[in-house]
Amino acid sequence: MHFDKIIMNPPYNGNLHLKILQEAMKYGDEIVNLSPIRWLQDPLAEYKKNSDFKKFEDIRKRLKNLDIIPTEVANRLFDIGLLQPLGLYHITKDGGYDIKQNECLLKIIKKINEENNFSKMKIVNYNDTLENYLCLNIMAPPMKYGKPMFDWIKQTGVCDSKNTYRDWKDKNPAATRGDVSNTLCVCFDTKEEAQNCYDTFNTKFAKWCCSNMTVDIHVNPKFAPWLDDYTHKWTDEMLYKYFDLTDDEINIIEREMAECC
Image (tube, rainbow, N blue to C red; front, side, top):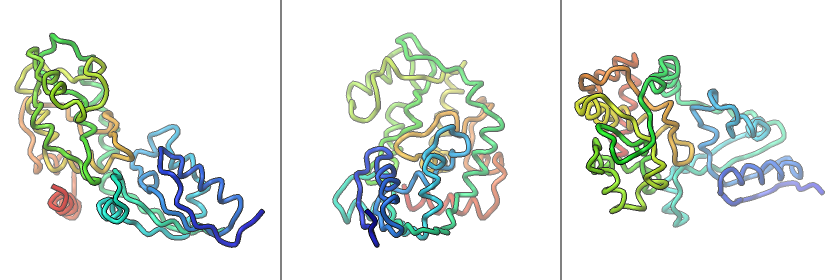
């Protein structure tokens, strides 16, 4: 069986839409498909053993054109609650679409990977006696209409043995993922260092990095912008310099964060 044209809007659960599209390509040389696109923009694909970007290379090769529908527009049009943009895929026999990556983000991720500061952090499971710690839930901020809700982080802040995080979690069960006892935490020698780290993740730079690294709802903590010294405060200007960003790259971050938050 072979069709001249196939028009489809498959289910979006996980990568099911890609598996269905992959199957449809067996029965037609020209397909128009509506489904999420963040897998195509995965900035961490190079560092993952089994990313969808690599797994569905056959789809990428046959992609002729891609019209992107921003998350907030898609949610408004279809009255849904997506966490990522949609795309109108035009699949043909020969393809030829040039998939553009976020070069600024790739540059930052390369430096993060080379320094591997996350491996130097003290990562422990949550327990009631921890002092001066941050929960790694900050790497996956809740989303609303496709935009990260960073404000909730301010309500948890630097936690201590008074169960600051547990108390907040009990009052906001829908805002975090998993049981508190399974939460991984980053511990610091002093409250000042913990606070400086926490404040760093509230900068425009860190928020921009984390929001652009999400392919679904998570950020791999290893690739968040951890630094090797939190004995002092970090500003956006210091972070821009640390990651050797150009004026054009800085302007992109500043503009996108002004639109987002």
